[in-house]
Length: 75
Image (spheres, rainbow, N blue to C red):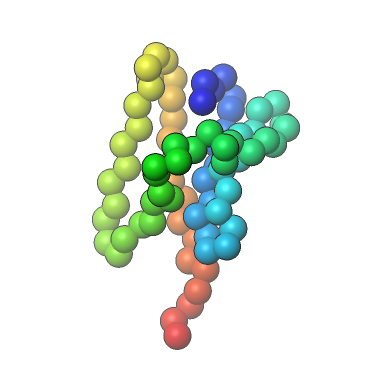
């Protein structure tokens, strides 16, 4: 998708709650339909995980952040 300054894309990979949401000017809309049909949601592994990002233009203005929340304590 083409992002604009101030846009936020949130990817939620929780089991049963997978969503991709664009927030622009305070309005949320789904980007789920923009996902490549041959792709899969990523899952973080135990230990270090490396993420890279790129843009066709404006890369110096792009900021990426990965947040992790553990949904389950030990079993």
